[in-house]
Image 1: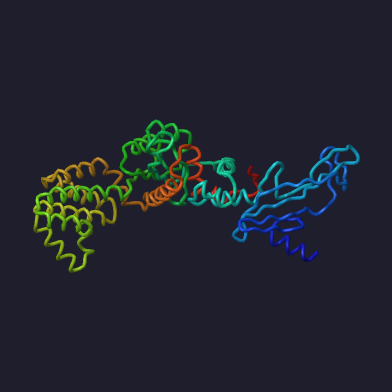
Image 2: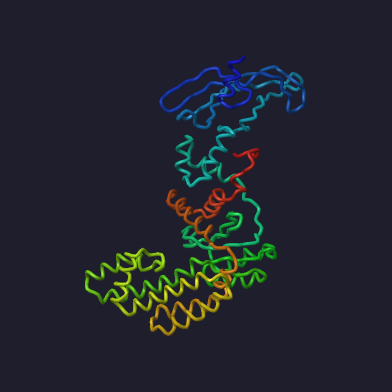
Length: 403
């Protein structure tokens, strides 16, 4: 009896008796029986202990000790003496008509909460890919409501015939709320008008005009905020355009030197070492246009250090005038972009919210897509992303039965 108690604890299944273990290089097969006990007839409710016959059932379980585990259940069928109904014994860890244990299904869902592909999970648990996908498809989506701070961005999903998919997150609670099949205005409009948006106070996005229009139309009470990374890189791009144009005029040796030193030129001057400052000074003397561009870049970084939107507004206005009068087309275009997006840019100085969490999610989605060699089915792709990132899915109720 003590042996059976420890065996039950080791295997982790209630009410079983281990009869025999077959072992080979790849798998363990365990012959088991349920402990015998009286059962109530499902038809008339009469209690019976009469066994009609036994049937063997092969069941796949979670891997253990580095091997696949196969349970061979010697399954009893009882007969009711009153109504002659024949029925199988009760089993808490194996649903009717299933050939895998409940815990194997949840083990699969747990593995799919990482960026593993369906193929790799199927290989690990000794099931077909279609079975793993079928188990995953059975789980449902969590309910969605608009958060106080909403972040929106796109990523290259290449699924459902669309190049870009749209992601909506809550950057405060670090949750992925939903994935949309495209970033078109009509797609976003049809989606957001279904929700109560009155509680949303901030709408964070990049410099994609459709997002700005959606914010103005559906989130009129929310503050529109442009993510800092996206307006900072506009100036870096402008500076790089000047550098590339100017270095074409240099001899090959100097051209290669400038190209290899581009990261040094992009850094803030105050963050450079003494030796690096000397290198930068020498490079700036080589071209008047690079010197102008570098000066504008440094002044822009000074604007970024503004403590609030009021001070930032004055600095941005002065910087835009200098950029327009610089004679550098890339900086004149950049100044125009800053003026067009000034409201959202300045709002970023009065709140701590960015698209940082969303960009991190996008990077992980890229890994997921690469591991799976892409997804054709958008709904499955969407569900997979939500399963990985949503706390509602990661804390999935294990009492729910999964086919």
